[in-house]
Amino acid sequence: QKEVEQNSGPLSVPEGAIASLNCTYSDRGSQSFFWYRQYSGKSPELIMSIYSNGDKEDGRFTAQLNKASQYVSLLIRDSQPSDSATYLCAVTDQTGANNLFFGTGTRLTVIP
Amino acid sequence: DADVTQTPRNRITKTGKRIMLECSQTKGHDRMYWYRQDPGLGLRLIYYSFDVKDINKGEISDGYSVSRQAQAKFSLSLESAIPNQTALYFCATSDFPRGYGYTFGSGTRLTVV
Image (cartoon, rainbow over all chains, first blue to last red; front, side):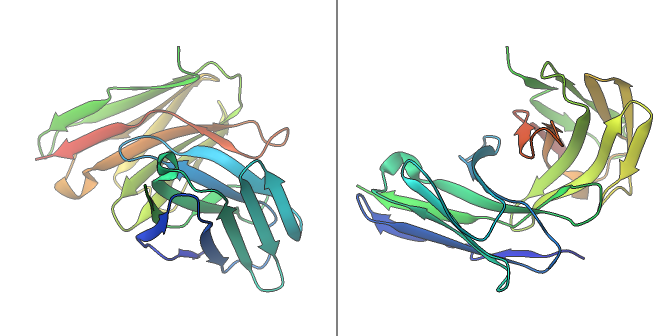
């Protein structure tokens, strides 16, 4: 059973602060990693992907990957109330199917 | 129009009834997926299809069946609905290997009473 672990939260940060979301995964062979944002009652929306160790920045978002530690994180700088959502971590399996396995998500609340 | 369309958006059905959830996409992706989402359990894969003739079971396929009628259409059926199938169901597509991320439909909220 592939496992993707996230702290369910809720994580509360003040507006303008940095929000840090963490994820660990069990399948050492996973190659691709994703962060999705899901507003309540809506579908998940892809916000970041990362495939190699290190940092990847896109606007206010930075994804960090450490394959040796089987750890991936998402930093949101200058957090806004509109960032309040559940953030899902997803990793691919190492088979040819390349299916995504999701964590249960971390609920983030940005306080104005 | 949405790239991935699910119908119906909401459905209430009785225990023992057969129900079909439909998904169609205009993205031209070969890969299509059905997930269910339950509070505290996250998204779990029910079935996936890489093309019309390639359909595979996911983590939790018991009680479900699927049909890939065309590249653009992938339907999920509950043969005899039971209350613990109450969940939010998502269809998704993937352009793998050209792209890795999934595009999700808007979801179907199914309640079995």
